[in-house]
Amino acid sequence: MHAFDWLIVVAYIVWIVWDGLRRTKAVREVEGYFLANRSLPWWAVGLSVMATQLSAITLVGTTGQGYADGLRFVQFYYGLPLAMVILSLTLVPFFHQARVFTAYEYLERRFDVRVRSLTSFLFLVSRSVSLGVVISAPSVILSIILGWPLPMTVAAIGGPTILYTMFGGVQAVTWTDVKQMGVIVFSVLAVVVALVLGLPADISLHEALHLAGSTGRLDAVDFSFSFTESYTFWSGLIGGLFLMLGYFGCDQSQVQRHLTARSIDEARSSLMMSAYWKIPLQALILLTGVLVFVFYLFNEPPMLFNRVHDERVRVSERAAEYEAVESTFRSDFEIRRQSARDLAAAHRNGVGVADAEARFLASQAALRATRDRAAGLVMDVTGDRQYTDVNYVFPTFITTVLPIGLMGLMIAAIFAAVMSSVSSELNSLSTATVIDFYRRLFRAQAPDSHYLLISKIVTAVWGIFACFVATWAADLGALIVVVNRVGSFFYGSILGVFVLAIATRASPLGALVGLVAGMTSVGYVGFTTRVAFLWQNVLGTLVVVLVGVTVTALTAPFTRRAS
Amino acid sequence: MLPAASSPSMRRTYVLVLVFEVLVLAALWGVERVYG
Image 1 (cartoon, rainbow over the protein chains, first blue to last red):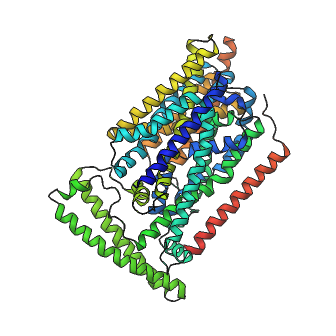
Image 2 (spheres, one colour; image 1 turned 90 degrees about the vertical axis):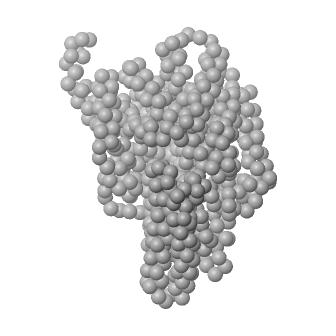
Image 3 (cartoon, rainbow over the protein chains, first blue to last red; image 1 turned 60 degrees about the vertical axis):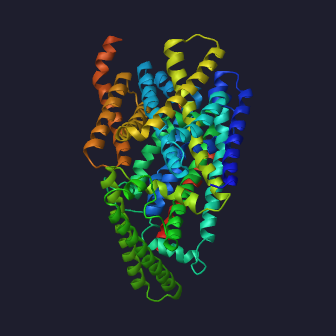
């Protein structure tokens, strides 16, 4: 990286830390530290909601998905706008009227302390581990791309974020989120412009989109109905609706964002911002990946984007085979480049499109098969069966193709994406720990200054814990995947508990039994069937509600007798 | 406790959000039909 790019990255980090730390002055009590005294404008909260959801995994992984698979993933978000409207009508006013600090606090008022503690505990377990993964994923990629040791990239991301979140509280989190969201959107738009301007002189954007479209990369609406296909219109609209209701309505990392709004209507308006802009933004990020694919139709890409095992394969006994595959890859690329030009010309002239498209798709399939052979060789030599390079496409493109300045800006955007998610999650972990456990169960009567001090310490402890998880996550491998997956079992089930709370007369026992039944059934389905993740959220919610209502009805006579 | 009702302008926003989503999906579907 050029010195000017480093200057941009360092300037970004200094700017954000300074901006976060100067909010410290405004924090004098716990309500200010966790909820900004419920004083923030809707647009700042709305940008914070979006920045929290958009992690570096989204920015780097989604562009990689766009490169490999096209726009298909955007269907994941089709249920989001409807979820935001439903939440604005239901949970948002409930939380604001109850003047709670955490979503789980509301459950104690409706049920009892056991339901509150269990749901808050599930949040702490799943969110703390996923926070480690949120830091780890971009850290691993940046360490390989920049040639830094992993602990150094983890510290570069985690250190500044812990610092300003610990001292500045939610004020620092929100106002830095606003700026980070600006950096991310501006950078992505700049890269899209650079990609369009970087098309070969004889290829128009219209022809480039035809090339991408012929490989299915512009398919964004799949109306087929399947419980096993990950992303379809229906799984996104129905399963995604339940996931988004669970995430934005019952996960403290998001609930805390809209609890900081000045009024109920401002909280609602902040959610409407995501309802409007999440799908277009996600489509733009995926489109960036699609345009990177088009770029590499005319410029030779690396055979494999993840070069971490490259040296090991080159000195292994299968080095000659690897070199032969590389040579085949180069000739496959030249054939594909020519057939892409032929297809673009056919579209331009309106002649022979079908034949040119068939040749282009055959050359694309041949190149892909060669890449798969290379990846297979890497897996055989290293024994790394998890090997993949999708997440390395965009960072490789950034660091090897983008001009000076834009490269630094985009690396800063990756830092912004991870820091904005981490800060909100740290802040919410601290809130749940202090409000739902420390103040509720261990020390109910203490001066506000005591809770404020404890909140800052707890923020730092969670931050350091997340950095350790991030450093070891790469080694833990499958274990982390399992823990993260188990965490995802909670969403639909916890949503079910909130549905029981506001829409039924379920008893505390009904809520507890329903929650355990919901998580068990989602776990069973998740580990033993191929039912797609999005549908599991629907299942979790329905089981919790059905079991909760049934247990309440069956135990009602005993409960009445006891009382 | 009943949740606070949304103001008329908020209710209009809900409708606009859903209409906007339909338009975005239509645009994505249109891109797929034209270039796919």
